[in-house]
Amino acid sequence: MLTCKEVVERASGLIDGELSGWELWKMRLHLFLCRGCSHFVGQLRQTNQLAADCGARPDEQERSAFDDPGPQHPDFLSRLHTKAADRRPDERKA
Image (cartoon, rainbow, N blue to C red; front, side, top):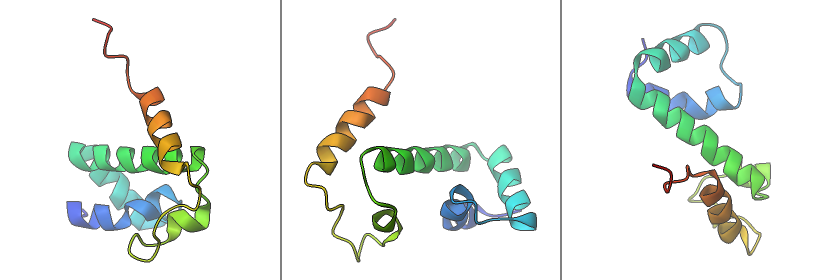
């Protein structure tokens, strides 16, 4: 079975559909058994979807944070915050 560190290293490959066969099976097994890693992968999926919804180009998402100063859209962060706020559960409900 994969370690948590290995899951983190392979999480993007899982989300992008790049894992197959035995690697995919080991990843799914670990995520089934490890709540923390399952939560991490879920957050990563949501982050990718928010970035896509806000207009980040795929090539920007693939770049390393150290190589890329950020999305080219000047209002990207404001749109990201708005989208994230729209997806939060309503805390006013009791």
